[in-house]
Image 1 (cartoon, rainbow, N blue to C red):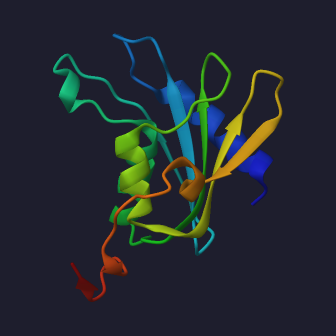
Image 2: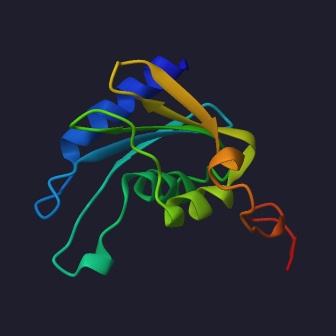
Length: 137
C-alpha cells in the first residue's frame, strides 16, 4: 500500500462524514501492521461530546476486527489542506502505534507531508507492553 493509495482511501472516506454542525468533513485510512486498511469518517452529534473523529472511528473499527498494531494513517478533509489529528486522537493512536508510525497529510499544493506520531506528540504516555498482552502501569 503506497502513501498515495492510502490518502485516496482517506479522501474517499470523507464522503461518508456526518458533519452538519461544523461542515468540516474528515476521512481517515489506517494501515494495520498486517497490511489491512480501515477507513473512518468524523461523525458529529448535537451533544458535541458524543461526536467522534475520523481517526478514532478507523482505529475502533480496526481493533474490533482484531488489528491492534498500526503503522500509518492518512487523514484528509473535504476542503483540502493539512488536517492534523487532534490531541485525543494522537493519544488514542499511540496506544496501538508501531515505532515510526506515520501520519500522512496532503497540503494545499497537493503534495503529501509525512510526520511521525512521535514528532506530533513527543511525550505521549502509554502502557508498557502491547495491546491484548501483559502490561505494566
